[in-house]
Image (cartoon, rainbow, N blue to C red; front, side, top):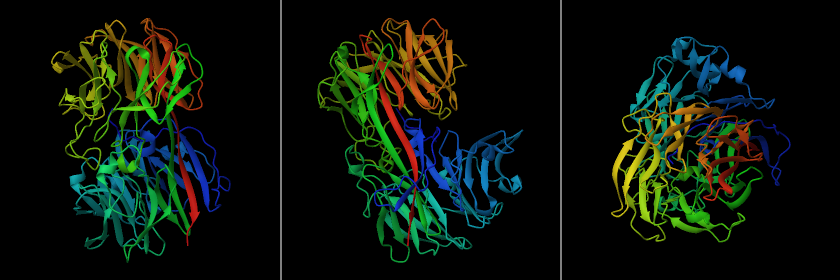
Length: 597
């Protein structure tokens, strides 16, 4: 499945200040915020206000969250004060909190202590940095990077063209200089220094091994050092980006502006450290903690038992004797490039019977395969590229459904589609004649998933026809879909926006859609059928965690099947109906603090 870089949905946490120190006693855990989404959580950005009292958690297409670092409370009232809704936010010196949202019929950027008309020229998708006094704003439009970087007082911006995609910005303490971190097409990042008044610029560092995703850049109070998140002191290795086992986790580096010397100051094995911020003699940063596994749950409900650690998005193999899954982790420097697919044997008691075996591997993202009913073919989603591209959307990457002979990892990968755009996993119809998958529609609205069917010719190993099913207009966006056991119906997870989800049943041609249920979710949560066709399994929020539920196909009240301490999603029912395989996630985003010289 493609990856929409979304923000995080969070659930309650306990503020830990003096407690939570590392064994060395030098690092203090300021906040440990559990997450309840899939890939969206690790990519969320953390920013801290200039006074160190507030933290924002932001990303794309999901709610923004404001937390008090004094009280530990989430302050939705302060975030929304005077607005009907808030879609994004940024700290801005003396201007305080800038918010993009809606107030009555007016939509745009608002600040509590300045006229909103001063901010009218900021685009909805602006990423913003402000000088310490709030008098100068720098921003770029993440949806229109060719527009360039705008710098100046509100309403008096000047355009600065920059070569590459900006990923982080910071003003000098006196506000006269802006530093921008830029990700370049070759895969390395650079630091550009821009004089605010003249827009004179100089590239002061190149060959940096940084993430292509948006983050933060910090500067020391004396203006002599930058703090940034890097994999290492040397240039990136694009080949290594695609290796699931590569040790390429982000560390916080201190960069001497005068000499260019850089050295790590924060690192932790197997975890990304990111989003630095400096206040006085304290360095703050964020850290991602991620545990993911494939788990099995009895189909009638009960405890989830982990089958294999490090996996996500399970698929049952032929006759239910194995489970395939994607693995590779969410390294921010190599976002989604490092995903391959593996398989483990499973016995009748739901216990693992073998070590993992790699079954789909290559450059860029691979999702687990679905076996054809006769077991001769596998179909899978991949962003396959012919060479090691440096980032997710690099030219040369695909985003399509592939076919391959099962049991032969060296067999040719046959590309079935050439129109995929954030495509999802592929699923075989019970008769083995069709493949079902979701994808955005090129030329259509981004973020809206349509449902597609490929009619197959398995003798020649090709797709005869691709068609988008004409679903009812009430169905907004198909996050997930699954054939009924008899192939006559399709269950649909409809993303209504935010956390709103609906479960629909449609005929196999997309007609006569009937809604069974409205519920809450956070991500691409997943659905499947029990083999008798009378019950549908789905993942939904139960309080603040994703759990598994069942609901009768004929309609009725859902039943909660699990009470897990983590998040359970992507359910897939075994062919004999005994087990539900699912992704189990336990994630959090932490804020740490350390005194620096």
